[in-house]
Length: 88
Image (cartoon, rainbow, N blue to C red; front, top):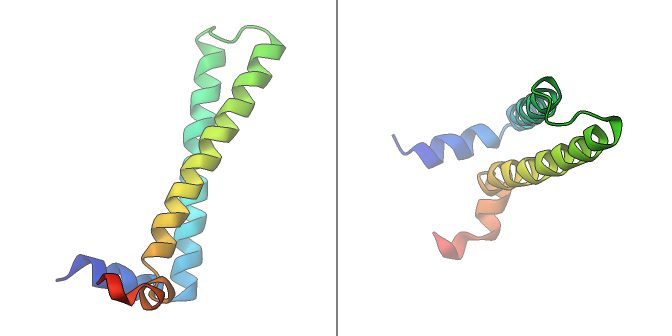
């Protein structure tokens, strides 16, 4: 099977696209929340101020990861493929 075509067909269904986006956001939140919690539990961020700075840093990392993931999902959608047909 052509893997890219299977992904494009899946992303053509709005429900699947939304489900993948929710899963992406959930897994990224779980990842960055785990990093932030580990920094606290391991004693790396010991006071409230450093915990807040690390929390915002984790938010930034999460947003960057979500942006990259959504760019991947959008690039696999048929609308993107039709707009960029000359590259195929």
